[in-house]
Image (cartoon, rainbow, N blue to C red; front, side):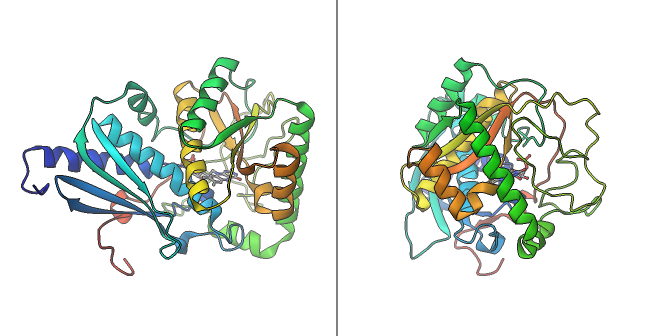
Length: 344
Ligand SMILES: Cc1cc2nc3c(=O)[nH]c(=O)nc-3n(C[C@H](O)[C@H](O)[C@H](O)COP(=O)(O)O)c2cc1C
């Protein structure tokens, strides 16, 4: 039976898919590039959603291999799956490791009903409201029991969450992040790319990092993990008050055993589960990938701080109020009926 012949379930499946995609577009992505497409097609008794990377949104300078682009798509995929589960359907997921079709990342078929797992409902409820934090935290990072749950979340997705509990290692990671940031400030091509993804006040754009997403003045933490220079010297950003306690929070790395497209997608899914779980417990994350964009630094981090595993994301967790806001493209701009038009 085709979904359009409809037992009534067809309508519910389509609604569940639409709702899940509407949540998935709020996944984090590097520079808020939102480097994804979702193709939908009717299949026997259900709907298939195909997740594609959008290479035109890849950061050619900061991310030449597309690693961060695929990590971002992984975060969207995790949200899509959670949305489908939360609506009472089973997402049948096929990861597509096909190097002949590098943009095609995963197919998710939705047809079987299932009781919504309460954890999926809890995590999906955070999909739109979770925000990236920038700057210092008001308090220290999450308690141990929550960190253990976050480690479990990452494992569910075939990735590891490493907690940097040795202060010497945290300082080393902060120092490398700072050095990477300083080198990137010297690199005109890098800065030009960052400027393209940092819309100024009132630009009306629906992608990139808006001035409502960072404080008007960058905040130091001890040890310091520098912010990216989204301001470009412009006096813009959110007024978050003068007194900042300067807490770094808990420093973490998402890492994987291998370093290919499948591992990057897994890392993105792990990241999003961790971020949503933390958000449900009122903790936010500040993401810092500058050091992972410098191959020599990434290698150092792998060898000296991650026991040879491949670092995919560096972030700090802590408490923050609902200070920042972000933007997204309309869902209709990223969803197409499969087969996808060549240049939509
Ligand atoms: C792979 C990846 C790398 C990122 N790197 C950074 C970073 O180095 N600095 C930063 O401030 N935010 C970073 N972010 C966060 C994005 O800028 C953020 O997700 C995006 O602007 C959307 O905002 P939101 O997360 O508040 O919805 C990264 C996100 C991803 C997925």
